Length: 144
Image 1 (tube, rainbow, N blue to C red):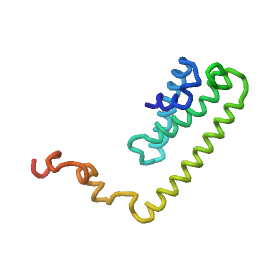
Image 2 (image 1 turned 30 degrees about the vertical axis):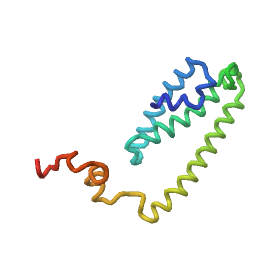
Image 3 (image 1 turned 120 degrees about the vertical axis):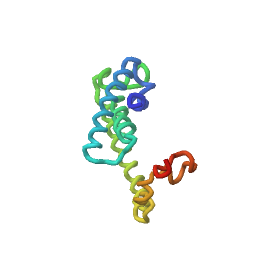
Image 4 (image 1 turned 135 degrees about the vertical axis):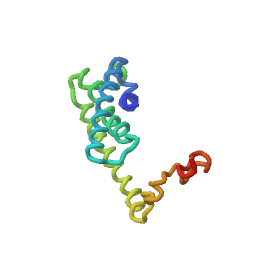
């Protein structure tokens, strides 16, 4: 999944072998971002940031390196010019600012009114059992 996310931004503007390289590097980006999130004790059980955030960021920047002029790119490795790379870096900064602003606008009010987290009891029993499952889907450890 990390490789697919990494190549999404530039899929129409890179050669086939470059897509493989970008996706492969994306795998390492994912591993590094996932390990960093764990080390920083960030609660991301499905590694959404590592896959979509970090690999997406890499994919946008990778287009500045690998973009092929024959198919609409202008990458540093093909042209020797850094203008596309610069544009991609500016795009990453704008995207990060936009996402941060929207996230604060949505999640801060939810946190302030107490809707962002489930209660401790809910978390202990599990949201799946409490909300989404028929009562017979799981054996109760007291009745087994």
